[in-house]
Length: 259
Length: 251
Image (cartoon, rainbow over all chains, first blue to last red; front, side, top):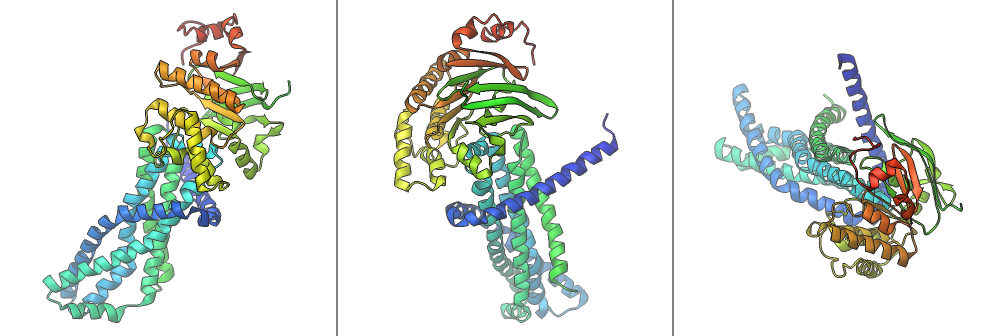
């Protein structure tokens, strides 16, 4: 009979072992960074795949993120009686330091992280990873390192793309529905822009990219149990990545932004 | 016996299920061994110990006197390059073409130029009767063709040992016989030491100079194909004649 304590114990052991294996995979992937010059083709393929898979979705989500941010901010400004000329500054900062990095990461986790876990999981259960090992090809160098590297490299680029689109969405709403001139909106952004904000947003994106790549690889690489195992790995990759992105977002915010 | 490969008291369990309970086996160079046994009896587990894909709980595997569990990572990579393996499902990488699959080990070793890899790939594909299929993706191939590509990949680095995991499983009898012929042909041309695991007795008799039966985690019988057929061992008899009743209990 299953009692509460053994179940909790098993889950705790499983959690610790999962966290441990993620850090182990991180260490091994970093070890294989020395193989980057010989793996440029594999890394480029992964970068292309991540960009190709994510850009359309990021475009749609970003334009609406910007639009909603501008609309909601205008509503709040009117409620507290703040001048609308600061709308661009408020929305721009929110997009650069929080909205674009986090929402881009969540989109990529759902699209790319899940894809990585499904691909590696299928390779695991169909013995393709064993086949690499049997040929003397280290699967962490061949499969994990390029995905991990590409994911952490691409997330900042995708975040910059998202920032541009989201600001465009916010500008459209501000000009069309809030009765703000585009010069006022843009000067608000320009006057409040700080390079350190953009840097912080991109640092977040880089960490989120590393998390998504690593968690997707971990879940797929250690998948087992046939199609069901691959399905579980895919779901777990998205859930764990999303939770870790939000937790690390808080941690980075407390380090980079002193209140 | 002057053993090339030696398996000494090998034990392996998965989730408290004892799969191998002390397997001891020796092989000479250029010998062709077939391991038979019921599905799930641990044949593939035994095979994957030979190239270090699975690590033993207890016991050892020796290649030319060297315990493979004591090899350094680089030495293990070197050993694996000398052991080709045909997987049960061929295990071709879906994202690569046939040519890229066959040439993968060569390309990643960085010892060959691109044009050399292309030549070797074509030569190996010709050996398995699949000349001119380099640009096709594995998803476009039949089961038999996939196995042959898997074979071409296994022999691409010209290994001294070939491991075959259920080489004829899932194939129609004619294609299965073609694969058997191909294995015999490759063993003869390449002078390799080969170990095949199978439950297909027709295949076992055809490709094995020596047959061992794995039962209940241990070697039940060891002999040549003639001896297997006249063993007088009830377990072996039940298995080779495919009888539902006898000393072997259902799983």
